Image 1 (cartoon, rainbow, N blue to C red):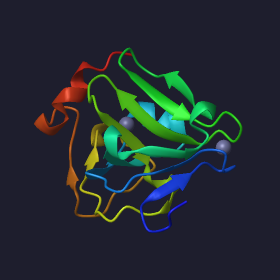
Image 2 (image 1 turned 180 degrees about the vertical axis):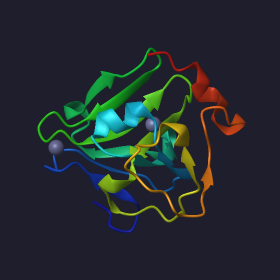
Image 3 (image 1 turned 90 degrees about the vertical axis):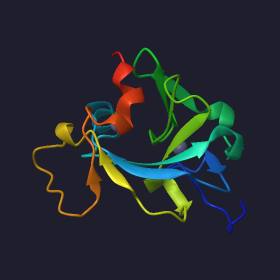
Length: 145
Ligand SMILES: [Zn+2]
Ligand SMILES: [Zn+2]
């Protein structure tokens, strides 16, 4: 792997990927992310699919259809959940930032779906907090379980 561009891997290392450029980064507190990752929230980076490439294990990735429009990619050997793709954001792949071994050089911009935040999590940073009703999240309003 080229260590000079952002990229990462699953826990067992069978799936490796990289991307020269990411466009956005956000913490997502939605219930889909919580359950898929077994975590309070997921920090995503948004990458144009044209910028994204698998370095290893592309055929190994399994895609779970998590809603009518969306799917989540994971490694079936180690269980790492790493990717999100949706018809609601065509041309994008969202990558779990915690799986990066070379971090993307951009700040986290906001919290999304904060109204679904785990009750046992305290958020005390100054980032913008978007709810499902925020216009910035309009495209995701059409997600149907
Ligand atoms: Zn793995
Ligand atoms: Zn989410």
